[in-house]
Length: 279
Image (tube, rainbow, N blue to C red; front, top):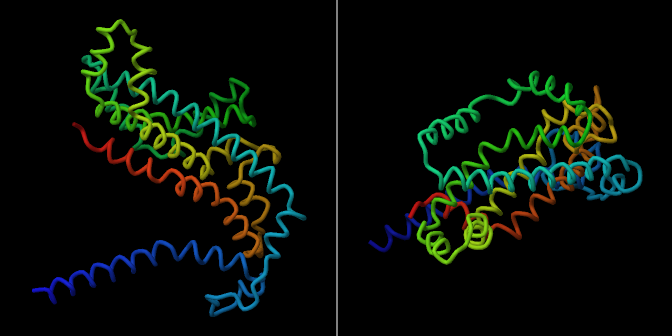
């Protein structure tokens, strides 16, 4: 019996290792390619370990390709403001959806869920027209508004699931003590859903950081472009690519997301589990 259990455990660990290798290999390949020369990056068959590791691509970012940091700064500005605005709206709207029950609740939830069914490209023409009339095309404000509008439905539903876990009795006790609705919300309820706030904020930041279609459609000025669009238009040539440089840019571009998950993974896991279970 023990041999059978040991064999099953070995099989489980073997499968987990295979899955881990499958998931982490793209990251490994990105880092390895960034450390190669561009000539070695084109070798066939490819080399899985750099023959002559070099930091030339990273040095190029610091010396020659200064425009990269303009894209990087724009990415931080747009992602940061989008995360803050989406999280604040989700805090208020999610609370209303969780606590105020009336006959339209189901229809509102259905509308939020159905909005996630349509691809982003299906609303780009109307979105471009609306922002054009408001003179917000080719501005960071217009891009932030467009990204926030795309994220609000999911953020609100996610935040509402965290509020559902908080017992109503806590708010009733505060009301008896004389607290107003907003005092109870910001003083008592919100501190209890901090993991949810972190989860919504990181989700919004991540989705904005990787956004391409909104940025490519709504921004035409090079100095206002975000990282994904800047890489595509500036560093990918028509006939040949500098794959070492592109992968070096990808490594530096991925660092904020990696650091976010390293420092906030505890809150992310706790928040997602809490939001998935209704007490």
